[in-house]
Image (tube, rainbow, N blue to C red; front, side):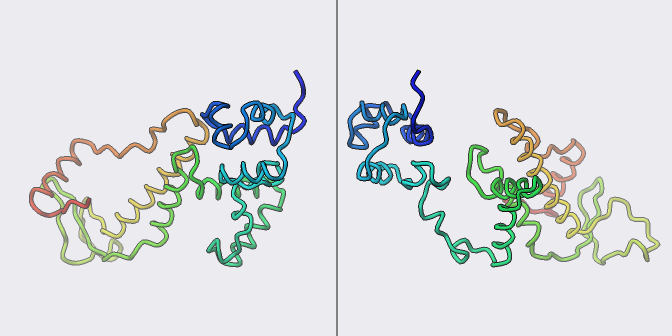
Length: 234
C-alpha cells in the first residue's frame, strides 16, 4: 500500500466527509469524486483556490485542514482576553499551565477542557461546572430551624444553638445547612459522574441517577406536603 504523502491533511479531510459518500461529498465541495479519493488517500493536496473552497464549505480553517493548527475555527485562535471573558490573571495562569510541561499542569488543562467543552460526554463537564458555580455563588438563605418527626416537618420558631442549648431536640437541622449539603452533594455526584464517564466512555453511568429515598423518608415528605408544610419546587 502506498504511503500517504500528506497524512494529516488526508485524515482531517476524511473527517470532514463524515457520513457522506465520496460522490455526495464531491458534489457538495464542487470537485470530482476521484479528487476526493486522492485527497483522502493523501496523495495530493488541493491548490490554494480549492483549499479555500473546502474550508468555506465545511466551515473550518485552512490551517486546520493542513495540520498547521489544532483549531478548526480560525477565529478561535485569534480570541483576545476580552473576548474570552476571563480576567487577565486567569488568562496568564492558563498560558503558564499550557506551557508548563508538568504532568499536573496537563491534568489541570484537561480538567478545564472537560468543564467547558460540549463533547461526546453529553456535556457532563458543563453539568459539573454548573453545579460548582451554583454552590460557590448560591444566594444566602435564612437560618430557619427544622425538626423532622414522624408527623412531618416542623418549623421551629427560634434558632437553637447546639452548644448553648440544654434542650435535647432530635432530628434537628437548619434550612441553610441542608441547602449547603444538597449543593455539595450535587457537586460530588456530578464529579463522580464525569470521572466515571471518562473511565468508561461506552457506558451510561449510574452514579448520577436520582437519589432514592427510603420508605420512611418518602412517607414523611408525603405527609409534609399533604399538610401544607412543604411546597413542591419544580
